[in-house]
Image 1 (cartoon, rainbow, N blue to C red):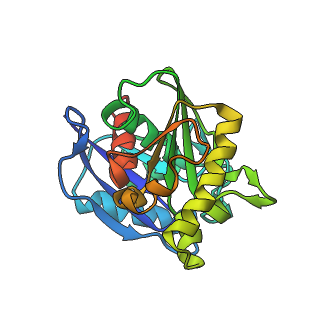
Image 2: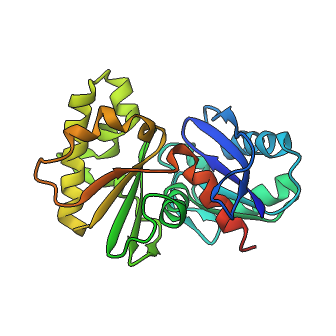
Length: 247
C-alpha cells in the first residue's frame, strides 16, 4: 500500500509515495529548497509543489522541525517564528484539499527506524537522533515513543547543543570530521548521562557518511551502542507516511 509522506526540514522540503509493506519509497523523492524566511505561507507553497509533482490526491503525512501537539506547531527553532501556535494540520489540509496529519520530524524518522530500520526489534531505551540543520530526537522505551523530546536543545557547556554539534555547525565552522565527532561525542555523553539508553541511532543525511565519524565515537567512555540509521535521510518521509496511513 502506497501512502504519501512529506518531510519539512530547515534546508529542504522533500516527499514521495511510500510502500508501507516494504518501508521504502516507491518512487524517487522530489525535493525543493526550504524558503528563507521559512514562513508558513512560503513553506506551504513548497509542500504544495512536492505533493502536486506526484499528482497525489490521498491522505498525507507531513513532518515539522519542532514540537507538534494535536496538529499545532508549538516551537520553531529552525523556521520562521510565525509557525508558533499555528494549526498546521488545518493550514496544510486547506492548502492542498487533502486529509493531513502533522508530527515532529525526528519522531517520524524514529518510528520509521524502529519499524523498518536500525531500531527494529530493540527493547529497552533507544534514542534516534537526526543530525542536520539542527539535532532532532526521538526516544523509545520498549518500542513506545515519548513524543516531542527535542533533545537537540539541551544546554551543553553554555550552548544550545545543536548549535555546536549539528551538521550545520560542522559546515558553518568548516570542522574536520574528527573535531566535529569530538563535539558530537560530548553531546552523546550528556544525553547518555540523562537517559542511559541501550542504543543510539544516528540519522539524517550525514548517516550516509557514517564511516567518516563513527570510528571517533566508539571506545571513548560511551556505554550505549551507536549505529547509523538504515533508512538514512528517507526516514522522515517513511514515518510521515506511516502516520498518514492511520487517517
